[in-house]
Length: 121
Image 1 (cartoon, rainbow, N blue to C red):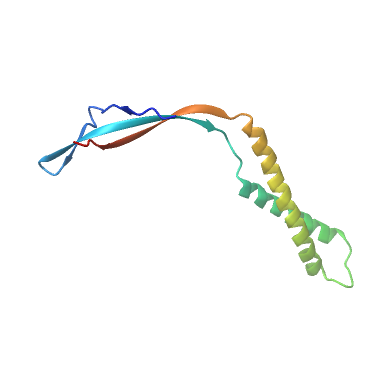
Image 2: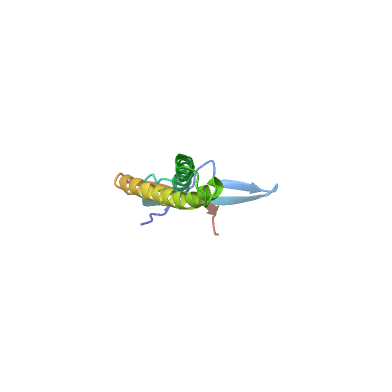
């Protein structure tokens, strides 16, 4: 839905090129209706989820007694892989839920796009 309007502004009507040449300008305005809404940044939610998963893995590693078969570094590594992946997925899920909730508050607005170009003679 575009509505071009040719309305040259008095101040922007001509541009000088060099000492002698003056080129007349024309302004074209297009109006469109767009939908505006806020959306969360998925990468930040996923990174935060992975960091929370790493902290949970550290807490779980320290909360259980030492194992004769595996040392604490190996246990932390195994738990870190699992907990970080789960935290990453939960962070993405939270971002998706917030995105769905904010989509209901979307608003339609009218925007104008101005294009200034030389007049064809």
